[in-house]
Length: 408
Image (tube, rainbow, N blue to C red):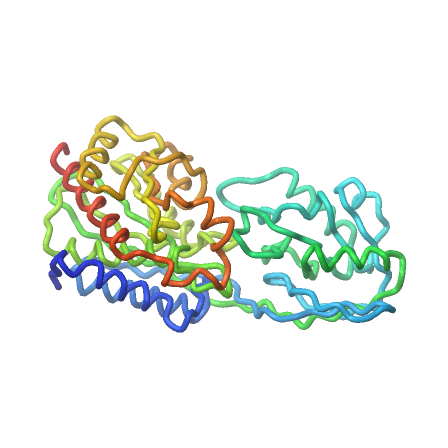
């Protein structure tokens, strides 16, 4: 067991963040960076004297790379869709802008160009465990019913996909229609070729893989639990410093300091492995480990997109009783960088809030900027983060635990 003093906390948190983003590699679920980061998390938790569970689960890997659409006027390079199957087709190019147009097409075996309203937002994966969008389900069903050889989506920006441009319309390993996507400013030129014969080539792989959900637990001296979480996975091809290396670094620093602090509540520290994955497998694994539910949980504290330099830290509340709200207010009273902020109905705190479990979200006050300009891109690098702000987040959580222990 290790015991670490708070005086060097910012330096330790910076070192953890740099380790998570080492080589600017991503941590997508099932990838090598993800596997290494979860192993590091488990090692730090063990050194801090916490009980560690490492629960494996099946997932899919895929290899990003280009695809090519050839028309009589030339060849356009498009992006291979996540988890897409391969395709080699010479077929008529069809197009649709609405689900009604798509449903009216006789497009079996064609290359199908989706643009406009039907391609304006990333489709929620079919069978996503926490919510469904009926319109998206209808679009996916219409694509499959049309039976195209492949689809190419002309896309721009979508907040739910982060700052990535263009975004993949389909991010779902349950969809077997090969898919690709292209920037709106490039793809609109393809509309002139609708009705012509085109050639589409995409060498893609969907690869079975394994990943794990780590659970670190510090048993308390009394009843009740406090859950503290941050997702350890990233989107592909992003270092994921703010989304969400800073959150995981805070968890690592928190565990190091919990080693020397007795607590009345049992503290569970959860690096969720699936927030940026279509299937959210890590979250589902954790829920399965709690078949009796969360009635003994005082609060879930989730950190995501926090620590941006130059911005305050917002804390928002979801169904928290007065005692929890008052404990949070007391914990942030001496921290100038931590403040009450607006609700954010996204990220892993909503997994619990939707079940009526009291929850908090910790995020940057510049969340809109992070989502719109930084998240899911190669620009999400550690230099954007302020370790002093991260240190205040750890201090806030430690203070919250102390306040809740005192009134338990």
